[in-house]
Image (cartoon, rainbow, N blue to C red):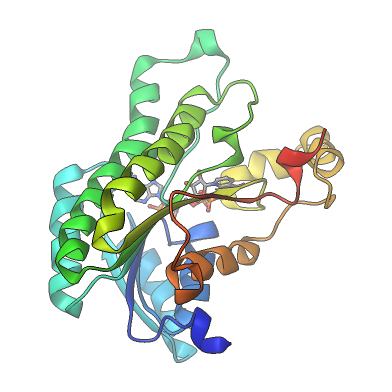
Length: 254
Ligand SMILES: NC(=O)c1ccc[n+]([C@@H]2O[C@H](COP(=O)([O-])OP(=O)(O)OC[C@H]3O[C@@H](n4cnc5c(N)ncnc54)[C@H](OP(=O)(O)O)[C@@H]3O)[C@@H](O)[C@H]2O)c1
């Protein structure tokens, strides 16, 4: 059974892995045996996270770059593949949110969110595919959101990007399937991370999440690790173009 979920011998890049959901998924994947390459913008933060993993006997490296610097995305994918001799999986997870009533949105902010949350994922997926196609195997995983499925006010660019990832996940899945590459989108619900600090500390919003979600609570970041290991491992070998919703039942609740 454990072999089914094993990532031993594999190399995985996880973007936005300095903290939060990215670090939780990277930790679970490292525990499953992968060498995980942690991405974020600050080398010192990444090195501290990698050191914590290594202290536990896990394999971790870092690749510091901004995912909206598209030339850097290209350079780093090639460098990771060259340094480690392979690249089996990319978890394209780095993301930001920007919340404003519609009439207060600056177009520049809309484009900034799209560049980080969507276009960077496209560039990284394309560059990863360049490495994976000759290997005839690979796993591309996007972190989408329930906000790409259902709606709340103010998060216009975020919702556009997350719905975009889900759509692009399907076009990539059909195009890359002949090369043995699967492409899936994990759609988390409400997780207790830094991105949501203002929401978890807002009693009204906290009560909304707890009443709206059938499991009656916020999720902890570690609760996303299993989904990433499943999609990256042999257990997920026939799953592609899928949106894996991890939301405590939020989106199926009337
Ligand atoms: N938390 C939730 O409830 C939830 C729900 C649905 C989806 N998501 C999605 O899950 C992903 C992770 O969210 P989180 O909650 O873990 O957020 P978080 O705690 O704010 O972490 C965001 C991560 O993204 C990195 N990052 C931000 N901008 C970046 C850039 N331009 N280039 C490279 N890295 C960048 C950050 O690293 P540095 O700041 O160190 O660079 C950090 O590691 C996001 O895509 C988010 O949309 C979260």
